[in-house]
Image (tube, rainbow, N blue to C red):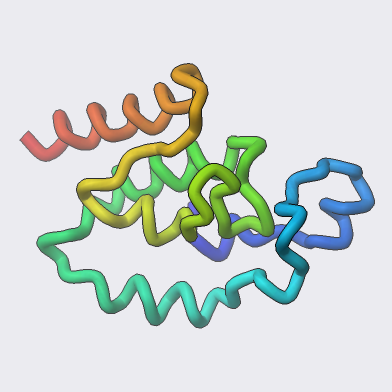
Length: 114
């Protein structure tokens, strides 16, 4: 799964009544893929997780009901594609069950790098 795969059709999302949006934000805050790509390109390799771990983290975020506009975590306001790429990142979800999928991805990634 790539960052662009996280993008959603906002009209369909709203029509489905998901309620998955921040009350203070509008569709205009959706971050274009080109902006995400520029930010991701600036992350130094030593600060970046493996591609496998990145994909696992993105997958965990994509399946979370707190993902808004396909790019933004509603718990901290971060761009999940950026948070997922950075080594020291963690899942900000208040539920231990939700954080578990992120942590399992981290543990799997650590074992794969050994």
